Length: 301
Image 1: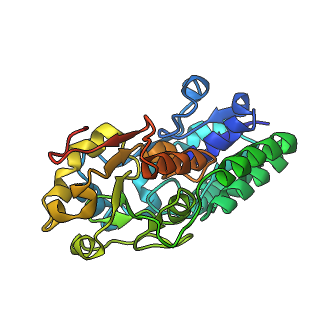
Image 2: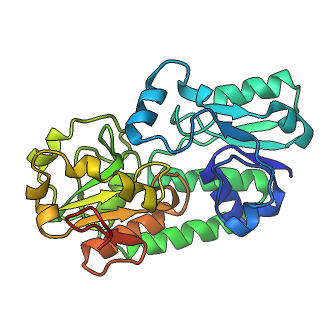
């Protein structure tokens, strides 16, 4: 089967199912596993200039010419040449990937005999269901069962929710502030924390930074969507400049962290289990090397 993945999480899933060699096309953001996707043709691009700040990206995606799927260019001519049997996409977030509607229109225009599957997971259970859905099309049910069993075993080993658990603010976007939604609150709960602002499955929306002082989180974790840790550190000044920041319990107690959002938190793929384990290690006082503590000056401690 010839597969084009238009969603990084879908590329993760295909690889975990042992079918990375079936990928004939991917997005410009599909970067895992690197050794298996590096040579796969890229069929998308972004309309946004590189190195924009969070505020500039938010302004560009909120309206005007960059809205929804118009953020992304889809190389329809290349898609036609690749002749995929299956295209994996999404319609959950208008600013995360090429939309299901846009892909279906492209398939219609170039008259491809192609199955288009939209992955719409909002919870960890939903993510594992999408693994099963993709596996059913690839004939990889046995491998999907192993992926699910591994995820279930690892999740069961985590502390889980508790009434007296530390409160956690996961920052999915810095400017404006957007807390982690969908599966992130569940990652926090599984890890032994209490998610602030949003519950499992909830869609994120902008909040004023002033609410953070009132929430007084015990732990703050920065994992902005699409930002590697180094870029996140570059923008921490946005949070540190907010009134009351220095007085937050998380700041006073050295419980401010930066994680790799795209790898373990932003994408609806099986690596969200890794993300829950990273959070559990942080909350238990035995930080994983994939979490970096932030000092009072906004640098890696």
